[in-house]
Length: 252
Image (cartoon, rainbow, N blue to C red; front, side):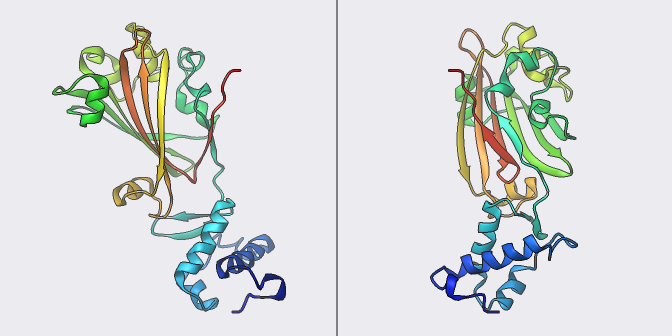
């Protein structure tokens, strides 16, 4: 199918295809199935390479019109992005009052998590940050879900001498989560450092979140420090970039 017209003559082919698909989306062509044709079907229809079709789909993804689901295809977007305010969510007024940081992110939307807790030898960089080289640490690994969608995988490490015997070593950490438990033993977080990277996922990471290999992931490494400056937690988070908007609100 030729989607070129005089007004579009100078547009790249992928933009012309994106324009046509956008028009179909807005006219309701895909409303019933909620799914776009496959890359193969679109490349045949528009008589172009699949890479060109893929670029057109990326335009629509950037506009939040569609989303790619691992092993399934491209669908009209229905999931409302989670607004993650990195500063406010960590405030003691939330976890100190027994509320989960996770609940602050979702604002009442449904949630679920798969939790694994065990004592392990942490990776070298984690061990170095925590000051536990050559020692084991308590690890908490979680896969978070909301509205039937996996949105984040997070793994936290804690020094054994600090958290042994506390609820941090159990699946359910109790009201306020790990930070509330750290506060109870006199090591509550007083400041945080987050390092952020954005890249394409590895195969295992894409499988964990149920996303495609072309969906970027947001990696955040957070270190929490107590009032004496001791690192009390390192948390590595992998977020589905199609599920989140990152917000940073700073005091003046």
